[in-house]
Amino acid sequence: MDIKELIRETAAKVEARLDALLPDETTSPATLHKAMRYSVFAGGKRIRPLLCMEAARACGGSEDAALNAACALEVLHTYTLIHDDLPCMDDDDLRRGRPTNHKVFGEGIAVLAGDALLTEAFAILARVPGNERYDASDYVAELAYRTGSLNLVGGQVLDLEGEGRTLTLDELEAIHDGKTSALIMAAVRLGGMSAGCTAEQLDALTAYGHDLGRAFQIIDDILDVTSSPEVLGKSVGKDVREQKATYPALIGMDAARAEARSLTASARAALDVFSDKRRENLLAINDYLLKRDY
Image 1 (cartoon, rainbow, N blue to C red):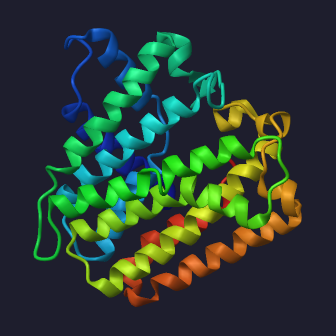
Image 2 (spheres, rainbow, N blue to C red):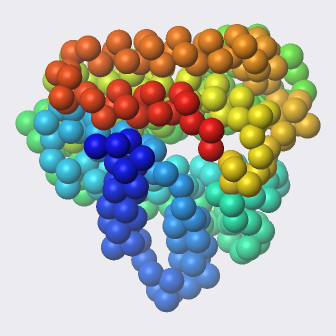
C-alpha cells in the first residue's frame, strides 16, 4: 500500500473510534467536551496511532486491540499539544492550521480540556485486552512511565529551563528524548505489547522508536526554519525568536540533516528481527518521516 494511502486509511479508522470513545459535545459540561473534541478532531496525520498499529501488525496482533491503544496515545498526545500552546508554555496561536485551544475557549478551559484528555487516555488504555504476556496494568504502567516526570513531562521542564541558554548536545538530546522520542517509543511498544510481542521484538521496537523519535524532532527543528505556517499548520520561526536550542542552531543545518539520515538508517536496522512482510510498513513510515515537508 502507498504510504500516504496507509496514513489516510489509518487516520480514518482512528478518528471513527475516537468519535465513539469520547463524550459528545452535548454531554455536560458541554463547553469542556467541545474543547476536548475541538483539538482531538483538528486534523493531523495520526502518526503515533499509525506507528502503534503497525508495530502490532509486525508482531502479528489484532487491529482492534491496537486501535484502542492507538486512540489512547492520540488522546494523550492532544493533551500535550493543548498545554504546549498555552501562554505559560510556548504561547502559540496556531495548531494544525486552526486557532489554538486557549484562543477559542480561554486558558482555564484549555487547561481543563488537556487534563480531561490525559485522564481519558488511561481509561481507554485500561480497556485494551490482555494477552499471554501483557495485561492492562502493563499498558498503563508503560504509558505512565513514558509520559511522566522521567520522560515527556520531564523533557518539557528541561525545555523551559533551557530557553535563552547555550545547551550542549547531550542536554538537547535529553530534552527531545523526553519531549518527542518517549511518546513515539510508547506508541510502538504499546502496539507490540497489545500483540503479545516477545522480549526480542519489544527491544527492537524500543530501539526503532528511540531513533525514529530523535530523527522526527530533528526534521521538526529544520522545518521550523525552512517551512511556512500555511504548509506546517503551526507557527514557524518561534525557536529562533525565543532562543530555544535546536539541532540546526547547535550543529548546523547540514549536520542536522545528516544526523536525521543516520538515525533513520539505525531505526531501519533495528527492525531486522522482523520479516520483510511484517516490517514493510514501519520501514515505509520511517522513510516518509525523514523526507516530509509538512
